[in-house]
Length: 255
Image (tube, rainbow, N blue to C red; front, side):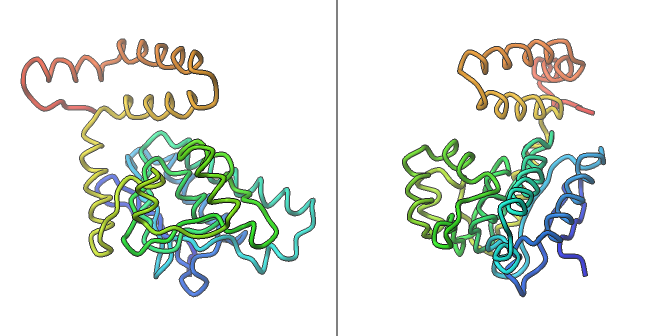
């Protein structure tokens, strides 16, 4: 049985971490299967949005500790690069990616959620970076993405303390975008994506690129990226259709 499942319906791909007996822990095998699922989302034009979620009571409870326990420094570097590569691939997808955090999102699971563009959490979700309790640090992007999302102080508190926070606290600090009842979580994610995908697909891709690349440099760098991408959009057929539809008081017909 696949440990990562991918289903596509109405232009939305649902990637489900499917190792519930191990709380969907991220082993090398799981990372490889996740990478394959993301690659499919990259190459299939019919996929216009992605939801990442977990089977059972966990989103992803972390990396596979039994596998990590045997790593030396060389192997540890390779494992970290492997996970970072998959998560960066998710972050670079040109379609919106939503994390539907249905349960435990700890360690690598929190880092997986951070790599998604938007995060909705179940009221039962628990999030955190507990690596320091194991004598480790986050290795799949947690020290970088968490600080960028919630600020240095809150990221330091979560990582150094190594504890867990509930969904309401995650919402308060900006780690998640909304808290939803468990039975409505996937429906909410699909509804949000369906509404979002009514916008111009090239504009969505350019917006994601501007946000992502702008965070990597200075404000001036980001403004330059934004201006160039805005200019490109001004020359597009998509912009012609979108503005014409607005002026004609009708819904746009994007490709």
